Length: 185
Length: 185
DNA sequence: ACCTGAACACCGTTCAAGT
DNA sequence: ACCTGAACACCGTTCAAGT
Image (cartoon, rainbow over all chains, first blue to last red; front, side):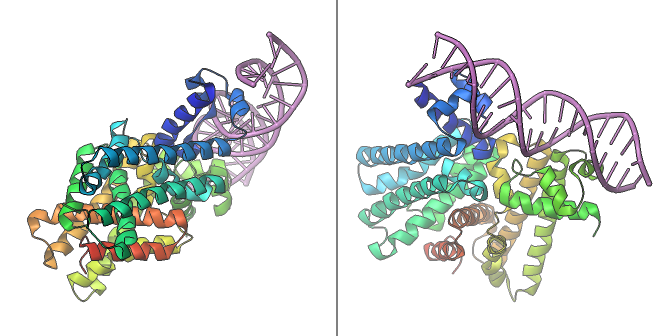
């Protein structure tokens, strides 16, 4: 793995735990095995690094959601597995979705970073909307609204589970969403 | 207003916009009209100040929810007005719920602060559970699960609306929760 | 009791200097 | 091309000194 790749991965992990503000160049450099000043040879600023991390994050999300779709037997099963993507972040040392952390940090974020965060949300909602229609859960007229609602609610469930360091709470919340009718049974 | 009070208010406003990590003692002091070192006369550390802010935050939430209950004509109307409490944060310069920001910042927060954040969540969920039972939406056996789900989902809606600086999106999300059956019509 | 300037070790960032 | 030490202005925090 190249040094640039190693920086991207280590920065993503740190930002899912500590946010953009909490990302520390000296610690990040130590993780990668270089000095803080050397990071600037690969990324011109913290803002550029964060934007690159956020872009890679939604690119990976696209691949991950593609994988869920192709390995599921039908759209309903793909939908059912959607919350599992958020669960996996919690499984990795209780990390938060990068999009959620950066949404919280909205005020202090460079515009380029916010753009990538928006793309991440759009990628998720477009995938959900298609699955909702294909599975016959809602008509195409309502699919966007419902997709948005599911994305926001699952993000909220992950945030709450993180605050208690309790993956079982995440599962309980998803089950409640299903019982209440927000997610298909 | 005493200097301690002014510090608490200014610190809360900053933390709802920038988080615990983003709270800056020199700027905070300037807001209040003193120097950074003087803050330590009122609060022994940043952790203590944050814990005091978080405690005050849930105490205010109790008062706010009490007010919603007593001014509502019945439990169903009180429930219907619940998302409005989160909406008001967005109305104040797109600020996030302090509990949500601190949930994101979980890894870097002092334990005393996390305790107050948990109390904030419990206060909200207990209020919701009682209103859900009183309004006859769910039985007391399911009221806790549903209250948790509503709290998490409304938090997620606020987070997403903040990331777009779009209060209308918050309203759309709440409407979708109602249509889907998570929130009573 | 309340406030302050100066100092500390730490941050992101720059830059001249190295290989 | 890639890395580094030293420096900069900034952070939370301390403390001796002021009123």
